[in-house]
Length: 145
Length: 65
Length: 250
Image (cartoon, rainbow over all chains, first blue to last red; front, side, top):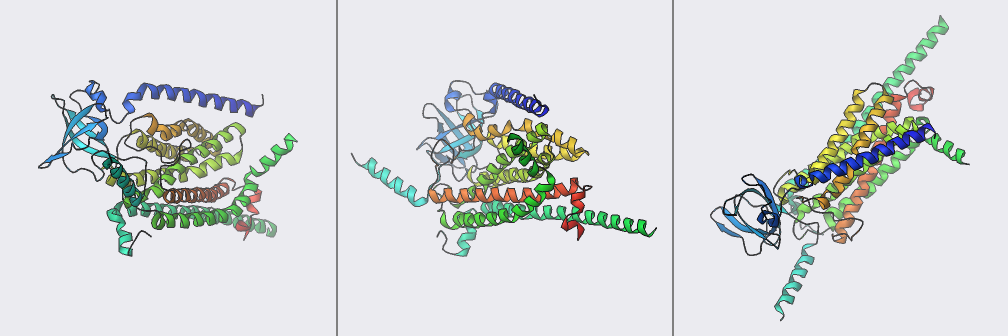
């Protein structure tokens, strides 16, 4: 082996070892890296008790109700649901049927009191007109028997 | 065309602060960087020229001496 | 035959022959930057329609995504140069890595900055410690660490070696950034453009973004070539060929 080949081999081997180490470390940290837990995990009791954490999911259609300054809504992952109460300003993109991440504490009755609500949007970008056409077509399809 | 008037364009549908805050900082950064690199280059060149001049003077001094 | 090829390669790998070559390439890359930039901005603001969900706020994507892509891509290129320098002991490699780092750091900064300005109106927060955002912040710090480490070591060749090791270790972070949105629950949405599925964007939006990405790419090459020329002058100060340069002689 020439000296440069030897050095290249050392570099390649070092990088491979580093990659394996990083993969193992990330795998071990897996649950801690997640920003939020899902409603199913909360219902299964996997959420931390008496400690602030985040729940992520969809805001259930028709669940948003406001009394005075407090908003009540239900976060769902389509399997399990968690009722959430939040006092404050909701972000622009917060809508029923759309994604949201709420931070706060779980009460003893299984309801969640949020101190922060973040809207989660998806990676789809469509013109307004196209979206309106899609909505119209879907509404028409629903209307038909 | 998306905009009816220049005012509408600058308003960005109510997101003016965020859109122009992003594009503005980006434009400043991408204009400043080549200017700074150009400065760095002209500084090196200046010192190189000074060194060359010093060499030249030294040579002439040696010849005269 | 093989030897010949190697010699040919090493010819352009010497600072002396690369310096004028880079000088000739720079105007072309600036021209490409301008062409892609102007057409990209035109598409971004005047052709691409308003988004159905995010209104005109989504237009930040036209610089956010190119800056983020370049921040990762420049890091990989920088690490390749650094690794090449470490293995082959070529002088130019270290200079290339050093020339790329500040531009990469700037791209990472712009990615974070434009991301914050996008997150505030859409998500409702400037910053959140999710995996995508945090790993991009680490990338920014890796660039800063590389620059600081090189600046702290006086001997250029030793600085190159130390920097190269840091750059190579940091490479592990790049796939973490890229796949973070797939591997973990993040607030950041998934990729709109990826290799294994069709883009989830309207065509004009996509073209605007791709043109802006080309603009950022060409810009990065142009400015890195400018910087590497300055670095060559700084490092090769005492060589004869530098003294014979037209811009030094005058």
